[in-house]
Length: 301
Image (cartoon, rainbow, N blue to C red; front, side, top):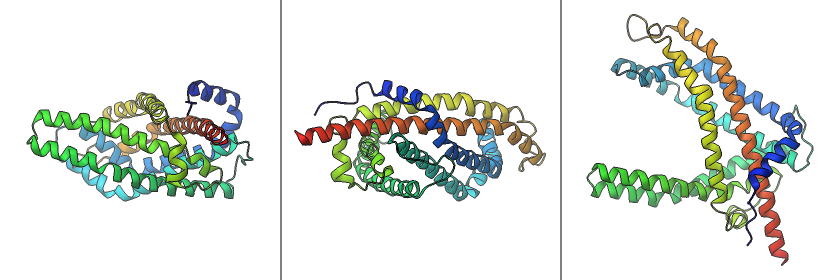
C-alpha cells in the first residue's frame, strides 16, 4: 500500500488556518467545561497541590507526611474530575470531527449524535486500553526477570529503563493504530476494533505515533513553562507563611491568596489543553481521511 501521511503536518496547519472560525465555535463549550473542572479542582484541592510543591522542595518528613495525607484524602474526587475532563476532551474531538466532515454542529448546545459519539469512543478506548494492558505483560515479565537476575544492580536498572522506554513507545504505537479509527465512531459508525480499526493504518504504524509524541513534547514544554513553573514560583514565594506555627497545619488564608493569584494560570492551562486536543483532533481526522481513501482505492483495485 502507498504511504499517504507524508505532508500531513502542513495539511493540519492549512485546515486550522482555513477553518479557524468554525473550529473556534465548536470548541467554546468544551473549553468552558474544561475550565470549570479546572477551577473546581483548584478550589477543592489547592491545599494538596501546595503541599506537593512544598514537599518537593524540602526534606522535612512532617511536610511529606502531610502532603501524602492530603493526596490520599482527595484521591477519588480527583479521579472523578479527571474522568470528566477526559470526557470533555473526547467531546471536543467529536465536535471537531463532525465539523470537519461538514456536519451541522450547534455551537452552544450538545446534540444526540455528539453524546453517542462521546460514549462510543470512551467505551472503545477502554477496550483498547485492555488490549494494551495484555500486550504489556511480556514487557513487565522481561523487566522483572532482568532485575531479579541482576540483583537490582545499577546496570540492570539502566537496562530495564531503556527497555521500558522502547517498550512504552511500541505500546503507544500499538494503541495509535486504533486511535485513527475513533473518527469513525465520532461520525456515528460502529466499526469492529480488530477487523476494521487495526488494518486501517497498515504500513503507517509509526508515522502517527512519532508525530503525536513530538506534538505532546511540544505541548508539555509550553505547559510547563506557562503554568507549572509560575505556580511553583508562586507557592515558594509564600513558603515561610503557608505552614502554621504548629508545623502540621496549613494557613488557609495564605492558600486562598495563592489560589486567587493562580486562577488566571489555571484558565491558561485549560486553554492550552483545548488547543492541544483541537490540534490532535485535526491530525487524527486528516489521518483517518487519507487512510480511509487509500483503503477504498485499494479495495476497488
